[in-house]
Length: 585
Image 1 (cartoon, rainbow, N blue to C red):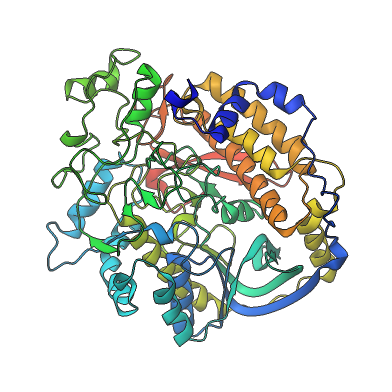
Image 2 (image 1 turned 30 degrees about the horizontal axis):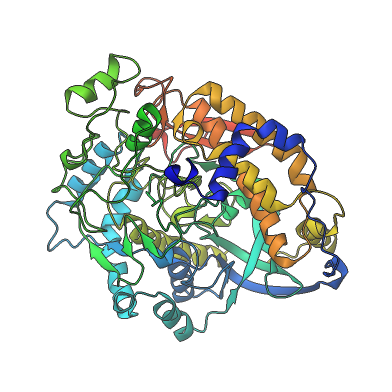
């Protein structure tokens, strides 16, 4: 039976963890992360403390981080980059094989038409300011990538290093930033620890640009496992508003050789990247998740038959909220209830969830939302957050560039380049009016203690085990993708237990497990956000589907959901009408 289901041992344990979560949480056997007899536990007193100063601190080493650093430098600021991985080799950047470029000389539609079609396909969930920004500036960013040699190699490292080395921008790699430092209402730096040596680093900066990407629940089958919403949660903890947690990314995976360097949607990792055009789609929703839920039938993974990875199967779409003809589902069961938009979609030859879009079963990116639909809430087109001095770009910015659905192949990579440029230049300009602020030694000592806390615990839980329990709770199709309040409330009870009891008891005995401990906490907070936002949005739209609220609610839900932490540490949710941006209540 296990062979027929193509379940790995890890997947089976993950699913079982969700079903028998109560027993797992109550159990105490094999949960301790106590160091082995032959391994000495690292103590906090063994850590050195290093201090760095800069004007603009860029956190992240992907497309957004690269352009933020380059443009901040070119605007006259002293810049430093810090990355949990290495430049061009971590996050989702190495797997981007298409980069959108709007060339006004060859485009098949005007920028106004492009923005309108994206808005139609996104059912109003996109922010047209960022959609237009993508079209207006993507071509110039692509030309810069070409000048650095990006399109000449399947690997990004050398082309990314070229502008950094030419400008002598300091690059700090393999350092996990865990804290943003805030004084007198504005961000003044960040703190983190090295993954290579026993060292805590405090960065003093006038402005900070978060280019930390999105994240997931470390699912199998897609290269998102080193992204755990680190930047979003750091910003949330100092009062920044975040958004987009109800949306789901539907990138597919393969049950066969899921760990190989092949992405069923983008193609072979060895392929050189290329540019994509102005085609507007309605991709990567949860249509096939619905089919799997209602029929249990095997679902074919990967691009539609006869289509090469990275190509669209349909001619240029009108951009409407309906799935292109090549992606229409067949042999689908009747909708769970008749009438409303479900029946409208059936009449148009589309069965299943309304406006979901997509062509495969989502799940390989579990925990990640549609690119650019989640992250820090911007208050202007530069990616400035609700915390002065803190900017974000790329997948760390909740720009809603294409809304709650994936509207153009290559748009995410190009959007990161464009947004990084805007954020970096704005951060550099802002530096001219502020001074460096010194954080007290007492506060820095407290931050160091919080960073190293998992190393000091003698009893507790392994972050790997807690992550596995979280995966069992959150990744099932009937919790994360095909949603109904009863199941989400049940999952939320488990997640809150993990947050309240297990996070304070996460422990580590080396630098690797220390990283895992902080990532696990970030994923748990993200899970709480996703469940509560999904419960709050009582409709179905784009990549958010509620089995118990299957229709689009134009009267009550022409709005995004923003989240922030109040002075008591409570998670607060609010609606922001689409038309109200960038005003805030």
